[in-house]
Amino acid sequence: MNDTYMAADLPFPGSPVVPEMCDGSKTIQFQCRKGIACWNACCSNIDISLTPYDILRLKQRLGISSGEFLLKYTLPYEMDQNGIAGVKLRPVENGKACQFMTPEGCGVYQDRPTACRYYPVALLSMRKQDEYTDTQSYALVKEEHCLGHNEPRTLTIDAYRKEQGLEEYDELARGWRQLILKKKSSGPSIGKPSKRSLQLFFMVCYDLDTFRSFVTSEGFTELYDLPADETNKILADDTSLMLFGFSFLRQVLFGENSIALKQAAAEKRRGRVQENAQQIEREAREKRAAEQDDMYGDSVD
Ligand code: SF4
Ligand code: SF4
Image: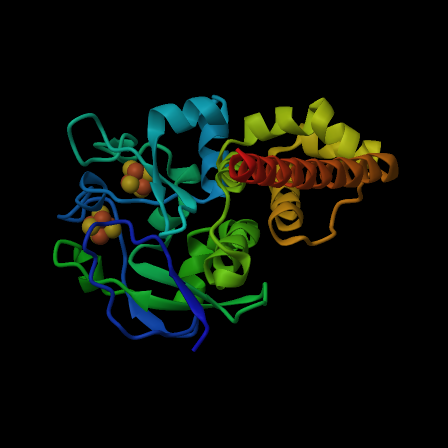
């Protein structure tokens, strides 16, 4: 089967996912509450991947740039053998605990990442080859140290997602998840992504403030034909910029035509590409001719 599964970022190393997929209507028994004997046990040993929207929310909360946030609070990692980049929360120096953990609980609770909101549920995304649309299903993670499973509260996964504010988080991460799924399943016809495309993916998805500067750069404005009101909107609002970034990546990485190109610039660019190809051909011809000259010259000598 050609479907690709993307397990949600299980927040804790070695988390045993009960291998039974279910949909949002499944009822679970769980409650995490202050005063529970295992309070903070989960945040003391983290392995949490971040979505672009997680980074956006956290950098806004901390009042710092995306670049500063990435440096201080994250670690990059490769999501697969093609080198697609992901970002994880960086634990405290020489430890495994989350930098945001406090004795009272999560220090960034209103802006906590998707994986923290989902726990103990795991999100599984799935898509068919050559489709952007993914379908979501879930699995339950049961770890011994988590006593929340013994609490006398039952609710459906859909209700739990709602309670944890996940509808918004999932909606705003959908474009990113679809890009990853498409990149992972594009197979040998598209080939290994170039270093430049991987760097572009990283900047657009995780370093929003650098992407904002990129959108105002000459190289970008010469090539893309964005109406002034749209430019103003994406420059003023992080979420609009992030969503625009996903469309931009679909265009650059998969050839989708979602952003208009300036006619003259597009032609100039095509011209440059053609010129380069002709130059390479010319050089190859000259090299071949020189090699033949050498060969015949040798035989005459
Ligand atoms: S962000 Fe908050 S909930 Fe998530 S691991 Fe850190 S302290 Fe725990
Ligand atoms: S109940 Fe589970 S999620 Fe809540 S503090 Fe304890 S270990 Fe963490």
